Length: 164
Image (cartoon, rainbow, N blue to C red):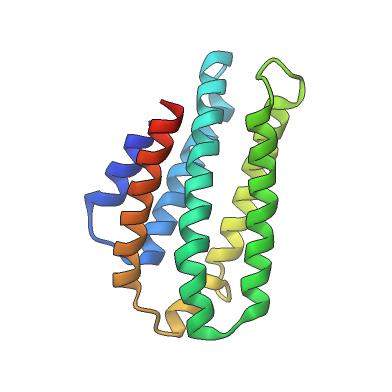
C-alpha cells in the first residue's frame, strides 16, 4: 500500500507544504479505513501500514522541512515543540511495532496513534502553525518539496526492502 503514497507524492508537482498536507490526508483516510473495517486481518494490515507511513512522514518533515523552517524563522520554541510531538508519536509507533496484534493494547495504541497524529497535523496546519510561518518566512517550498519527495521515495524503498 505504500506504493499508493509514492504515486500520490509524485503524481503532481507540489510545494513542500502541499506535499506534507496531502500525506496528512492520505494517512487520515487510512485511519478512517482502520476505524470502519470489521475485519481484524484488515485492521492489522492497516495498522502496520499506518505506522510505516507515519514514520516516513515524521522523518522527512523533521529532517528536511523542520530544519528549513528553523533556518528561515529562528523560531526555536515552535521547532522544539514539533520535535517533541514527533518523538512522542515515534515512541508510540515503536511500542506498536514491538507488540503482537493478539495483545489487548495493540488496537488501542493504534487508535491513540490516530488521535496523536490528528492533533499534530492540526497544530501544523493552523493559521499560526509551522506551515503558515514557513510560508511567511519565504522558505523555498518548491525546491524543498522536490527534496522531500526524493527522500520519501528513498525511505519507502528502504522500508519495503526491510519489511519485504
